[in-house]
Image (cartoon, rainbow, N blue to C red; front, side, top):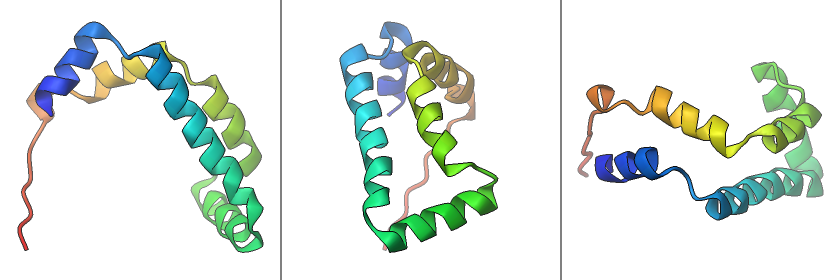
Length: 88
């Protein structure tokens, strides 16, 4: 895991992969509007999080590769990483 994160930090995020995943997330969120129960759950969950449900789509659209790479550098720091193994 650490090696993969290091590679992405050094080489950057593949733009095609980024766009594909971004479209998948966007599509999954839009798909939530297909069912009344899902819409109610989504609006209720977003309300308690302080999120405007329709603004969420605009936020997804505004995410860039550069922003994501900056988050990767700021959040995924090797000195703060730990590994937990859960056995049944």
